[in-house]
Amino acid sequence: MSRYFTQDHEWIQVDGDTATVGITTYAQSQLGDIVFVETPDAGKTVAKGDDAAVVESVKAASDVYAPASGTVVEGNPALADNPALVNEDPEGEGWFFKLTLSNAAEVEALMDEAAYKDFVAGL
Amino acid sequence: MSQDVQEPEAEALVPELLPLVAWHRARGGRMVPFAGYEMPVQYEGIMAEHLWTREHAGLFDVSHMGQLLFSGADVDAQLETLLPGDIKGLTAGRMRYSLLLADNGGIHDDLMVTRLGGDNAFEIDAGAFYMVVNGATKWDDLGVFREALPDEVVINHLDEQALLALQGPEAVTALERVVPGVASLVFMTAAAFEWQGNPLWVSRSGYTGEDGFEISVPGDAAEAFAEALCAQSEVKPIGLGARDSLRLEAGLPLYGHDLDLDTNPVAADLGFALSKRRREEGGFPGAEAILADRANGSATKRVGLIVEGRQPVREGATVVDDSGAQIGTVTSGGFAPSVQKPIAMAYVPAALATPGTRVTLSQRGKTHIAEVTSMPFVPHRYVRKGA
Image (tube, rainbow over all chains, first blue to last red; front, side, top):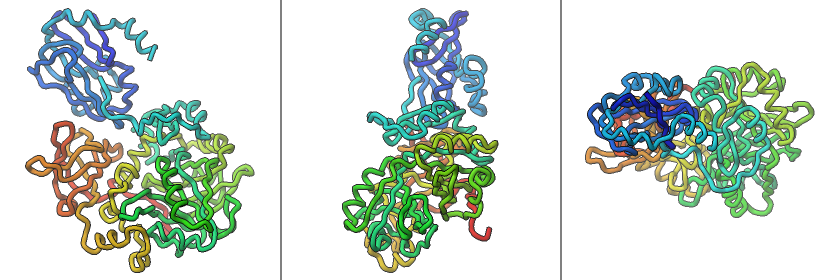
């Protein structure tokens, strides 16, 4: 299993041809208190870079992009009642959705953890 | 991930520095450009700061706001040519919410105006007025006042004064400990005090719906004074983000969002700012149009909305009819930390302004159902005379 990161602060954990997507610790700290998350429905197909989910903090609404192309398996059902889970555990229990990847090679273009850490340090 | 709603008022101007900017940074404030300055949007988090203020006491730096003094012969009568409130009737140490009106009845700004007695912090004669106007509009306001008022009226912009607001149910306990005597003030009164040799002008007022105070302090003493307040166990510094969510829950309009040159006081549901004598006498800008609206009802009205579900509906969303055509506009909105629901303010056709009416909102291609509700969303807890 390996985890990749985008310049838009999503993470994607890949396990064979399935993947889990969320937003990073840095992203949630920038957003502040998260009050609403809209995750995609199962069966929806997304292309890399498409708007896939919405996250809203007290101050702002943001789109979450699909880091890779595929078909949504499920959105995280826990976020509807407890969006603050994204603040509490953004890279774990606060995941947004799971995908079946249509082109697993796409993630190779993303950053690994060390590269993302450097990227954030430079912001 | 991308943010498609900007943080407050991002501007390209090089920010001027306010007296407390270093203090905010040292305290961990997240600074953003606001009204031409750098201001803290939050410290530990908007939600926690909001709830702390409702339960304890929050210290807000509002030094970006304009503090003005007006003096000279018949200054009260002169101010009444621009404001629809009973300014002549204000006695020393009493204050009033008022509006700087445009000739069409639109609103240049909303403001607080206080008549000063001889004992004031500004070394000015009794009978002068102290006014606090919005930060983003203060330069335009000064232009309007200078243009409209005769030379006999002297305007001083107190640009070296800081302004702090201490708000919340424990504000009185904390401030009384630092500045003995302030507990004797009641809502919408003000008086001069002193702290470590510095003159303070303290009013019992604010914009959160809570009991609290606003304190004008010389800029060079602001940091030490803010530190002394935050040394009280009841007090934490609070950013602009929570100031916005608190005033929204309190049903208080924010200039530039809920009020502007195209809204008139009747539509804005600010009829209380039109004092009785002034309604009878007229003589303020736009009086004819405003009084006609007051008599006949305005076409639209500012209302409160409670939105179904959890998703915030924000400024810029539209109110739509059954066919999807726009019939109104959301002017403020967000998730309300004390209400635990998304709430909003909107202008809707007068026929839809009755509490209980259900309306449809549209935001980024998605519709939301909301119910018109009376404001405030959270009861005001002002400490009034005799209370």
